[in-house]
Amino acid sequence: MSKPFAGVKVLDFTRVLAGPYGSYQLALLGADVIKVESREGDDMRFGNRANEWEKRGLAAPWVAVNAGKRSITMDLKQPKAIEVVKRLVPTADVVIENFRPGVMDKLGIGYETLKAINPRLIYCAVSGFGQAGPEARTA
Image 1 (tube, rainbow, N blue to C red):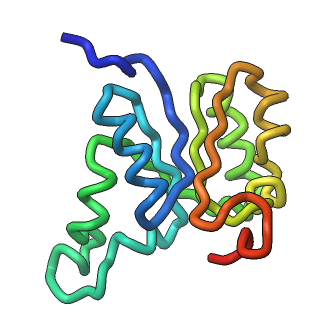
Image 2: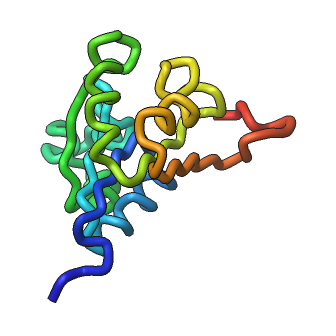
């Protein structure tokens, strides 16, 4: 039996908990989720390095919200990494990110830029403090 989101490709630029949990739900529903991580890895990967799994970057909370995803590491501050992202976008259906407002624009891969590459793209910006207002830039 096929899942409802089978055939949907998601580029996941999220980290820690709220964003990864959202893209994990999409993966559970059958989406092909590609998690884009920094070269150091998601902050949640290593926990407090108290056990062998955490030392290897497989802390239980990270595994719980990233199971079923493929991943790629890149330094989004490097032009070559941005070129790779722009090559992935035409084949994507969804981009989900949870940076502070404006970070994706500053990197050169904000909504307007990606929409110009793929007009049918669904762009989801997850924020604990909103996209505007006095707390929007709170990390």
